[in-house]
Amino acid sequence: MTSTSLRALSYVLDRLRAAGLRPTRQRLELAGLLFKGLDRHIAAEELHAEALAANVRVSLATVYNTLHQFTDARLLREIVVAGGRSYFDTNVADHHHFYHEQSGRLEDIPGHLVSIAALPEPPQGTSIRRVDVIVRVGE
Amino acid sequence: MTSTSLRALSYVLDRLRAAGLRPTRQRLELAGLLFKGLDRHIAAEELHAEALAANVRVSLATVYNTLHQFTDARLLREIVVAGGRSYFDTNVADHHHFYHEQSGRLEDIPGHLVSIAALPEPPQGTSIRRVDVIVRVGE
DNA sequence: GTGATTGCAAATCTTTTGCACTAAA
DNA sequence: TTTAGTGCAAAAGATTTGCAATCAC
Image 1 (cartoon, rainbow over the protein chains, first blue to last red):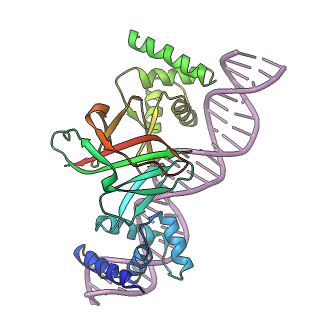
Image 2: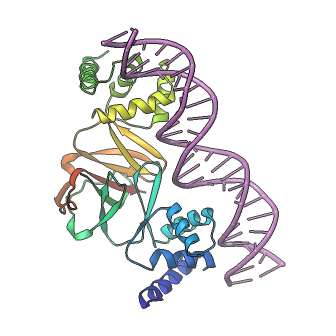
Image 3: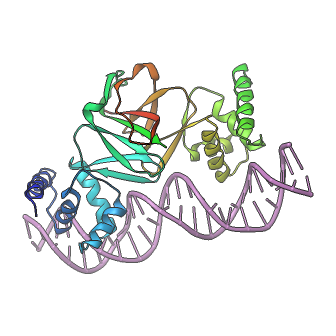
């Protein structure tokens, strides 16, 4: 295991603790898969398949539970670009996305490459939680 | 029928003709429902329910077909903000959206109230089709 | 122990599909 | 006619749920 993933793991432990989630085998192994590499955009089915391929025994229902719990704990960010399927982004820093309409693939745009010069006031009684910019590209 | 919806109807007829779509009873009645009022964000189920309530006999499958055909004909714009459900926006002018996380409701932001000062180059071989800005708000 | 977590299968929800019937040109 | 469009019911996908078994504390 690389030192990068060790750091990632201890961060995960902290976040789980902060969220009151027990560090179970499944959560830690899924975290290992999610955070071992570069920033990724992954769907529940894909993570489940990857887990099975890596001999990590976990049910699809638990994958869904874990992805949502990690999202609540701000370890992941959920992105919905097309009907039917959610992606979870392991990059929770400020950034936006290219969406490739043909392939359905998502690609990060570093936060500093998009700048929003003006934003309206949020409606009465609400505050802005997040601004998503999706740049849809095609051939 | 107001003159506004008469104008809308003849526009619909033109767009259908341009798309090679026959102006069937179902398409015209659904267009009537969609474009009779202000800008709306409506899901397939909702439009179907509204049609039934207005004694417009049409199947849910036809509602789906029609919404997609209208979207291809640029009479509508599809918006996906949360998993599982698509909304169709009767406002196809340049604009963005507030998304109310609690209620799931969408609200238009006029195009001129959001300005994007910088955008990255699209990836090799692609061009930008659309830029969606979703401002997620909560209480 | 005891309360949280997991796995499984069934259920749910939205959307799509196959195909016989109907309607527009 | 001939071809597009429609309705229905079934199928398909993604996600959620109920509940008994299992695990962390």
